[in-house]
Image (cartoon, rainbow, N blue to C red):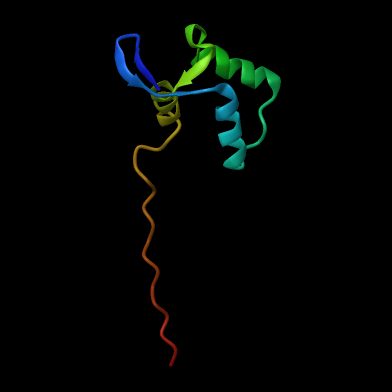
Length: 81
């Protein structure tokens, strides 16, 4: 965590290696080198050694999430006679 970065206070960071390890832990397919370079180019902050601001990652990921969780129908209890 940085005390301040680009005017924001208490900025949480993640290294690219940490990001890739978390993706692996979640069971996501491994990224190819070109994809890793894209992640670094889009999310990495060169002035921080290409660390990723978690708030930036959250913003990007929120674009891939549905606005509302899907509604599920409640299961009906089946009574045995």
